[in-house]
Structures are given as C-alpha cells and as structure tokens.
Length: 124
Image (cartoon, rainbow, N blue to C red; front, side, top):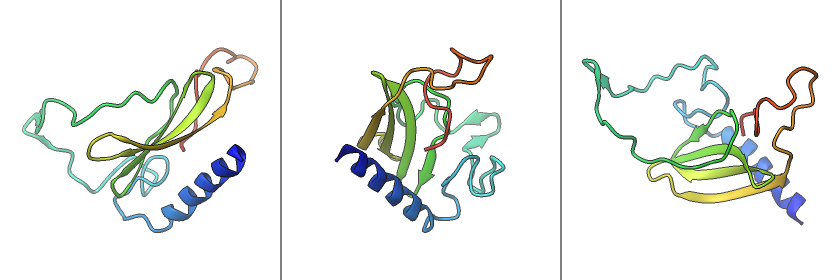
C-alpha cells in the first residue's frame, strides 16, 4: 500500500507541473533551465528588503533543488534511514505532506565517490 501511495504522489506531481505558472520552478534550474527568474530578488541598493528569511525548514541531508509551484515548495532530504519528499507552504514553511522510502545514507555506488553526497542528489 505504501508503494502505491508513493507512486500516486509522484504521478500527481508530474501531472501538476504541466499546469504550473511561468515563474514557477517546476524542475531543476527553473522554467528555462538556466537558474534565472523573471521575478525581482528584493535586492535594492546593496541591501535585501528583509534581513531575515520569512521561514526556515529542516528537510534532512542532501543536495537537491527545491521546486516551487504556485504556493507550494517541494523539497527532498535524507534522515532516519529514509529519503523523504516534503510539500511545504511557500508562505509559511509549514509542512503540508510528506512521503518517504527506505534508503541508505550514501546511496551512490560509483567507484571513487562512496561516502560522498549524503542523502538524495536529485530534484523531487
């Protein structure tokens, strides 16, 4: 049952990305896959509009890219012997849902980089 639920979540994510807004980051490096957005950064005259981030979230170890679609942020991280995909509210950082699967901390098996890249290294 858990495996079916995981596949349903992944299918929903794939379908929902087709209807994403232009400024959504629905895949790695943004809408044009170049790391550039048409939105303003908040940088004015050498200072940020706000000194503090609006919210922070602990998502576990890993080196993945967050995806932003509408008012949702999708992140992936490793903790407690599991890789976990989380959906967060973009305005508050509140966790809306998560799904996990068992995974070793160092999942890569390539010769020469065993023990590097703790946690997931892909984009949700």
